Amino acid sequence: REGGAGKKRSAYQEEVDALLAKQTGTQQRQTRKGSQGGTLDVEAARKRAQQQADPRRRFDQYIESARRQRRANPNDMFAALGLAEALRQRDITFHDGGSTQMEAIGTFQAAIGMMLAKRRERIDDGEPTNVPLSGPTASLNDELFLDVTAKSIDGLLANTYCSQAKMYFMANMFEMAVESYDHALELDSDYLDALCYRGSTLIILGRYEEAGKDYSRVLELDSGRIFQDAFTGMSKILVAKESSVPGGWDVLVDIMKREIPKQEASLAVVNDSQKAAKDSLRDGLKRMHLAMFSYHDTKTKDTEKAWYHLSKGYQHKMSGLPKWNKMYEDTRVQAVKHVFHRSFWPASVGSPSRVPIFIIGFVRSGSTLLERVLDAHPLIVGMGEDSVFNGRLDQIRNEIVAASTSPNPENVITTVQKLADGVVEGMRDRWKRIEANTKKDESEEKTDGEKMSPRKPPKRFADKMLTNYMNVGFIHMLFPNALILHVARDPMDTAFSAFKHDFPPGTLDYTSEFDSLADLYHAYRDVMEHWDDVLPGRVTHVRYEDMVTDMPGVARAIIAATGLPWDEGVLKFHEKKHAVNTLSTTQVRKGVYKHHLQAWRRYETQLQPLVDLLGDRVKFNLKTTLPGYSPPRDQGEIA
Image 1 (cartoon, rainbow, N blue to C red):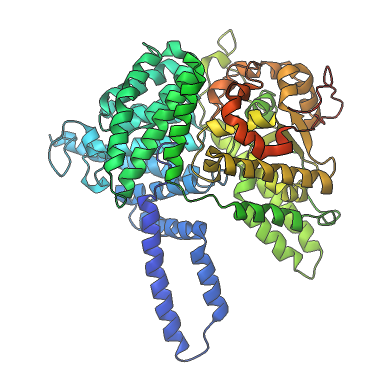
Image 2: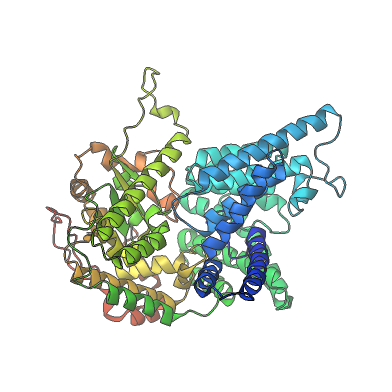
């Protein structure tokens, strides 16, 4: 989760709707006018309706309009800012491997350049740079919610630096993000937007002390509790390294003990018509209760109090969400089983490339550990969860369907090869962008001060979009030789870990209730059993418990499965200075540890209803199937 992303519709999304509504009206008038003298083009109308119903196309139409406006007004900083923000919102909404990230970053930079020039003009003319249209304010924080055209030039710059930083964050360019936040804070050292989200970026980089200082300042200054991410971020630091924050847990807990009753009282009197206020209060209460859960879970070890806060937090969260749609999930699973049968995959179709490595599985199953092991190899790069393949899945599906209806059987072969080549090229391009914009740490220099030679181009890219377990059929069609690693963990450890973690908005919101969590887990197991049935041996299974108890053996077998030579640095994955943007950010830096195995049993009484819902699947009769690997002893079922 990144600052600026959430459940609320953005102003740019509202503008998209308005623009498309206007265009739709124009098209309807043109259609009526044209039909007076001829036949209505039903197919064209159908295509237009389809385009308007596709959210991605709607967004892209709006962005193209913003591009035209930018080209027509190259010296207009607001035209540049409008395009940059639209591109950023698209990247937040649609994860396609960052196809527009560099355009957004460059456009933000162009807007900043014009703003800096305007600021110099004001200084040269002896005019203030920190006074908005409404008149003098105490600080730039008073301009946070002003329209961009009403902000002072300093307020506009601070706002734009923060948006640029959030774009860098989404692009995994975390050092550049910190630098942009630094620029915003040079304008006002207490600018809350920059302090709060610089803090979250510093956590990714493992700089806990600095992050703690930022969050402490936010908690001190933000009396309106607008930046409630500070509660989540501070609790992450305290769990990872309490000594990073002066006063430790006591400071945060004291604040939350005051704030929770106040916000509960406010929520009780908010009218249902005040949806934005209600959602904000629910989100704040959720975050504080979950932070209190972390406190009692890791610090006081009081499981009763911990469970109370976890339950209360999720009551607030789920009260603002639509009811879980079990039928939709069941339909998705049945569609996969129906479409991908044993005879689905044509012979001689697919790229021979082994460049992509796909990591799949249920959330909180150990995938980050597996990715870090792979990424520690000098010729493998972990691409994280912004999947190039997954972002192109609609295109892949549509083009394969179109090619399969062609009378020329060669069309499927050439189409699939083209699509596979595009995925590999997209992975390489993404790596090049990140590599070119990542600052190298001084420790990466040779001891004599000579710079290390540039990193060799990777031969493998690891895609860690776990929900691609639904898409193994398409992965196999494009890349029949690519390694697909399914990481699996004890079912109850997996389910409890998923339950207690607050995921970004989307389907995984529903891991916060037992019924829907069990439905999602059963769907996952159903699909994995299907792949093992129709594509026997195609998916390589890796038990998380084997990684934890026999890392040297598993790591060697994993690297062997990639077809690359062994490198001793793989076993030092936790020492590698690598930014990890995942819910496991703070854990993976600690290396391999075993104390959390069977962690769910601390809450066995509270979790018994979930055990009942999982039924026979509380056990997983799965073995690591890496070629040549044998565990030190037969550990049997995952249970």
